[in-house]
Figure: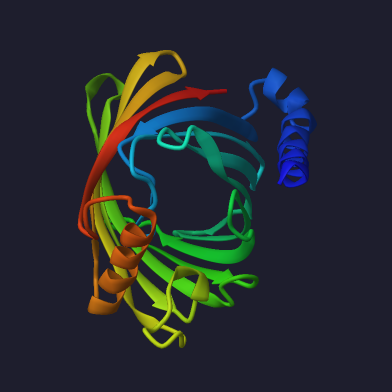
Length: 251
């Protein structure tokens, strides 16, 4: 895992250094930021993955159309970092359509690492629909499909509120659940409604509160979620209210 973290950080740092001259000239070709969020639970595609509060720091950098990101999860219950994700993507717009292919490496503590390719398609229209296909080509050997819609309300003094919803479909991805007999599971998976805000503090520094409600979209998904909660003693059920606050610094 340490080797993977080192490689991922090296790749992200290289993006920053390659774009150093552009940044010095205040070019719009380069931007990035770092974020530290504190949330009531770790949530991933409808699955509750922690018993207590988590801290989720990440850093990202974009140069031209390329973006690199390193994200981690610190579990306050175990007092350990149990997951580190490395994301690399390329985004290209064609009029109102934006296509974003990318790659994710999931590095876990206590579980097998896995990898995904993904393709996101966003269209600039009312509710800003965004459809993403994720393909886990290692542990899961299957797909996850996600549709997101939302709207951002711009307020005076650069304040903003974003209201959104998403729905997911599991397609034979063993890393996210199986049938009762262990066979491939394809079914509606998770839904979520959420609201976030951006509150400027000073120049490129802002606070980002979030509240959300996550829920299973099928009986099979509910079974999978509740099995995970019971197996790891996370408490509660598959219908989860969660939220938190993130601190962002852009550069």
